[in-house]
Image: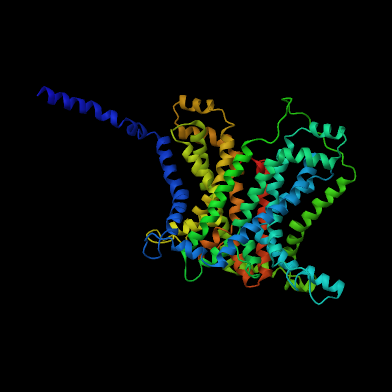
Amino acid sequence: MTSTSTTIGELDTRRPAEHTWFRKFLNLEPINLLWLAIFLFLLVLVAAPIGYLIKVSFEETGTGVFTLGNYISAYGRSRYVSGLVNSVLLGLATAAVCVVIAVPMAWAVSRSNMPMKWLAWAVVLGSFILPPYLTAIGWILMAGPNSGWLNWGWMWLTGAESGIFNIYSFTGIVLVIAFNAFPFIFLFTKSALDLISTEMEEAAQILGADTFRTTLKVTLPLVWPSILGGIIIVFLEAIALFGVPALLGIPARINLVTTQLWQFFGYPLRLEVAAAYAMPLLLITLSLIYVQRLLLARKGYVSQSGKGGERRPIDIGGWRWVLLGWCFFIGLLAVFLPAGAIVQASLSKAWGLGMSWDNFTFDHYRAILFEHSLTREAIANSFTFAAGAAFIAISMALCVAYIVTRKLVPGANVLAFLCMAPFVIPGIVLAIGFYAAYASPPLALYGTALLIILAFTARFLPIAYGTSAAGMRSINPEMEEAVRILGGGRLRAIRSVVAPLLKKTLLGGWLLVFIPATRELSAAIFLVAPNTRVMSVLIYDMTEEGRFEVVSALGCIILVSTTFLVWLGFRLVGRDFMLRER
């Protein structure tokens, strides 16, 4: 009996100890329950779509049996292989063009005495405001074979029977993407140049080196890691973009990864093959992002004296006007000409008849805003879906940033990893993952507003988290502890202290998610249904039908709304809200 009693007593005293961690976690502390809820939501938002995409790529259609046949089908034809090769070449060519465009501009703004430096910033801002697919439409209006304005002007001047420009070409695709992507390299390069003292350059000039040689031998090697980081981002942006390759590449019969993925979604749907075809795109992205982080982790510029030194503008004489002309030339090609072509077409009865009072009309705007329910619904959907995604993303990001920076629970860095994971997932791959995970029964969310909002949330969650984490690091935790001393909980501290102190940061993060979400095409094209179409998808559909006047009017609405939101961000958050750490 004694032995038995002892055994039971030992079990009684041991049982609570075995479950102490579980009871401690579920001790009704709201922050623990919040941690668990966020973790589960991020699994649904990020991990499940990609995991399901990988799973589907190894399943036989209709049976779910393991197979490598999808990969054989995806890369068993030379056309499909050429699509991957063409995309890699597109990324490399675009990155090279962006370096030629952006590095001289960045050097001129950061190092030289070039006048009107605001012009370079205006060009960078304009490239951000103008979505890539609208840039492509503007260049179609200007450089379409035998119909664009530039070709008409050439034929009128020379008497030739045909034009010399053809935007429907590999070169045209590279240039249009580069006109929108060069700000990445500009910002990376300028940020690095701003951290480097001019003392070494001045020493090189004292020893007899001219400005060009000094820049080539001293300055650029110091910022090369940052330039290379920008090159990687541009490369990934180019190979994952859908709008420009679809608008310019499909008519030219140039097959690329993104357009081939879109064709797999035609009839009959080949989801498993599409999933397999998307895997190399995902692997390339993961590999290059890893390389980028290694490069940017080691600084390519140091001060041997231990001091930052001075940064004095370099007098480059007459070359300052050459650099100013370069900035103006890039602005003309990247922003002013395509935007001007879109505005002109939106105000014309027929864009090909040129500018005249007889051809002038506001009918396209009136039809979009007051007559056509389809366009009104698309506008409303765009802003509603973007607002919902921005609200969810910034709310999730704030909670995760608070938990991670305050180290409230063990393993909090897992939440940070899940928030930043979509950064290394191309938007088009993420969209296919959402389709694979949630489009079929039992959920059957294909074409619903919920699926699109969740996809947009996942797509831009890294921006929201980067902004929120940067803001959280600037707040002293002592103020939150004061709330707790007075009897408030963690959630009360977030609501009453953290959120008010970060209101400008959160507003900036909200705008940084909302603005690109209103123009998103690569993810939306795979997830929308007829009743949930957004402006970007409607523009793509109308462009295929040749309705350039209506498309241009809808594009102008996007430009005006984006410009207003950027102005609002400048006024309410500050002039650097688009450059905050993210």
